[in-house]
Image (spheres, rainbow, N blue to C red):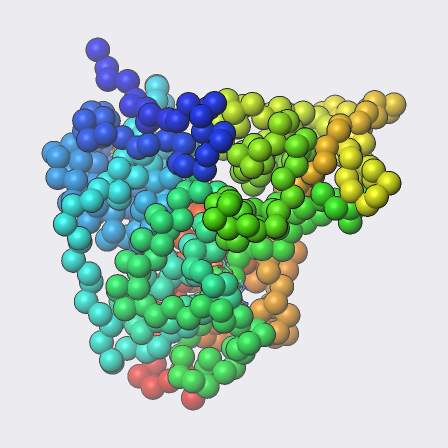
Length: 465
Ligand code: FAD
Ligand code: SF4
Ligand code: SF4
């Protein structure tokens, strides 16, 4: 009989809604070896084509099967600087696992969970790669999110002297200020950042490039190329009446207060955040699921997801929707908020909504939601969190008028090298694609590191003079 795909143990939904601890606990060594034995070790390994950071998937899985967990971890670290992060939040079902041969007739190998297992393995510290020699050029990386960290680590591996300039007081980008602790513990992110620093990468925090420091100043101080990985941190709003009421947050502000400003560690940190009793979260993506599940953990009695399309069109990972449902989040599909209601004292007391039905497909290929006349109704809520998407951070592009921009202010890049319209300036991740995924941002960082290497290798003296 075929071995079924192994499943991680999880905290009970009723227990976990009152804590911020991680929900699944990872494979045991026995489970990991059992799951690894399901891999067919295919010669052409189609799974590899689904991994933007080019992990040698069969090789690391074979090492797990053979019980050499430290070797599996080292294999991962050869190409992926953040494997413990990817093993937790990478949308594996749309990446490597989608093209695993076992997916054709049944369940794919649990590649992501195996990656998490090997990355978490606490054996002897892996040897640090040699530090950059003085002969290679200095490269500046702007933004310490997954794109910037990957570009920095790959460039350091090639021998460049890399400094990351990060606007916030902590590295990690969305991994730290967006994705909540119960999905991705901050200690995991910081441990991976430490490994990147051990490769010789310098990290300068509280440096807002474009405000406290200009790109020209970076070039003048000896950096010969720059990678911009500043992400998409500008929240979108619906533009409906009542958005200025007390009790209306963007998901960015809400999650940043809880994660980065540590409201989740109350009473140790008494960060001001509105803890609604009845919460409406608008949107159908991962950010909406994270906001809804966070609201429950902060003590909300009733949390609804309000989404204008149906379940089939919701972009959130299936696992996240499932976890939210298990925890008691109510889904109100085909529902559009029209305005927020004022209690007369400037505080939110509800949202007026309209029911929708699905029409013809729109530009995104998904069926367009069409309002149903006369279907207006009210949802009681004292907190509304808007999670309908983010646009690129405008600060740096605004400071560089010669930078060619694309749709919604994204930086235009060559998709293979990350090169922008300014020589020596490269970009990748959400700032170039608009809000996407961790692994896409990391893949872009990897490609840009190669692009920068090719650009700098052409010169024996400084390319800019
Ligand atoms: P970011 O992670 O945004 O990092 C950019 C960094 O640049 C930040 O640290 C920022 O402070 C810094 N910065 C900005 N401007 C400047 C400046 N001028 N100077 C210096 N530094 C600057 N993706 C998944 O794959 N799986 C998930 O489960 C998932 N869940 C998500 C949940 C939430 C709540 C959110 C918001 C996003 C989620 N995503 C998920 C998307 C994913 O996190 C992003 O696509 C990814 O982080 C983009 O990486 P990045 O490096 O391009 O940008
Ligand atoms: Fe799959 Fe993502 Fe891991 Fe690559 S990083 S092997 S795509 S889970
Ligand atoms: Fe293993 Fe699936 Fe990759 Fe084949 S495609 S090597 S079975 S993970």
